[in-house]
Amino acid sequence: MSNDRLIDIPSRLPPDAFAPQAIKVRSDDADRVYKALANHIRFVERGLKNDEAVSFRYASFGGSLNVQLHTVGCVDGVLIMLMGTTQDGQEVQIVQHPSQINVLLLTMKRAEPEEPRKPIGFLN
Image 1 (cartoon, rainbow, N blue to C red):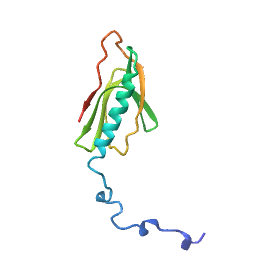
Image 2: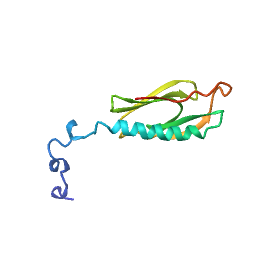
Image 3: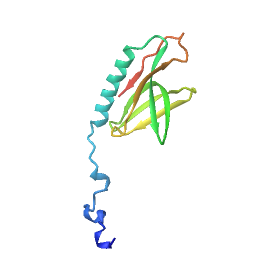
């Protein structure tokens, strides 16, 4: 193959194509994602049995983590925050940009089903 058939893609892009200001993020993106996520979580909560809790599966870097959800928040209108407890009892906090949020909502057995179920907190 001769070199004249290769395409130099970077030379065809404008010089500022990868500059931070080239990525447009609306200030209400995180708020809209937060509200939609909150509505879905409340829907799942309504169908829970007494010994169940809302959880989510977070998958990243080839692994996954099941987390019993405690709190959902919107940070400064730009980030989504999910806080909860893993099946091993470890407290975790996941913070993501709204364009990257990908959450599988699940139900899981509560660790202490004899205790009253605590509603999920929503911070905004």
